[in-house]
Length: 124
Image (cartoon, rainbow, N blue to C red; front, side, top):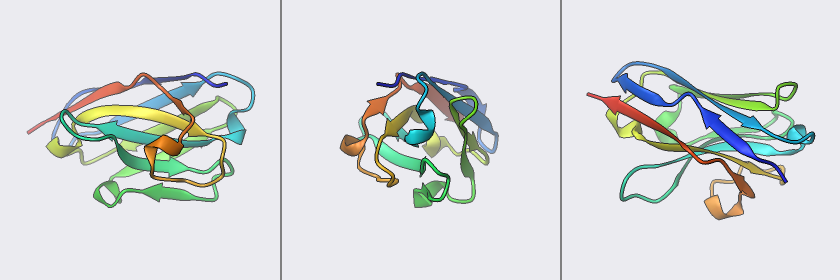
């Protein structure tokens, strides 16, 4: 069992940056593949990025490549999402997720644990 708590969301102008954090409980954080999803109003939850438990594999959705960076600090049980050059279309609730498998899968139902979400709003 792992609990995830996101922080760092907020309101930012287009072109700005935000850094999201996701703190995980438990002693086996390094065993989990970690990811970020987002959900805009009226839309399905969308995969954003994920990092494998040994940092070997990192995957991004095409729309954020070159702008977002995922990283993890196993000593702090935390995964980060650095978001630069933000666009209004990045506006959504961002969710942290964890899964015991090694693969960075994009299907939400294959992830085991979820945080409560943090709102990111990008104004034009």
